[in-house]
Length: 96
Ligand SMILES: [Zn+2]
Image (cartoon, rainbow, N blue to C red; front, side, top):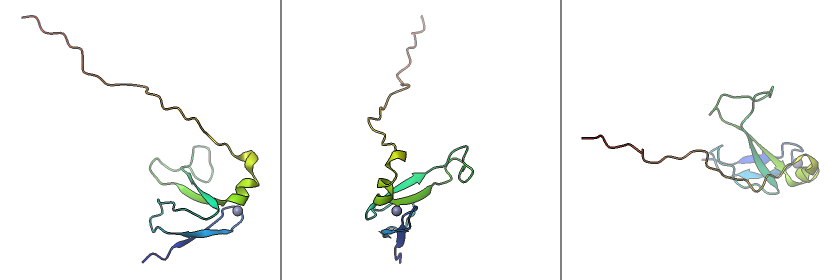
């Protein structure tokens, strides 16, 4: 039986509660903090995995976020655009 995992702030180490899922891909709610997923990127010297090779998960408490708001970007108004479409082919009849 899964007994839970104590979730701690990545920055200060404060406990944010206990994860209620044994599945590490499920980021259950934490008290007074946020979860983040990092899929790595080219250029990182610590995490640059191959595609589909998982992610890093990090929880940060609300106070540490408040202490560093100047380093945070809140991305909103995300646009979804269609870059291609599919339709039936326009094929001419063969003359008889
Ligand atoms: Zn913290």
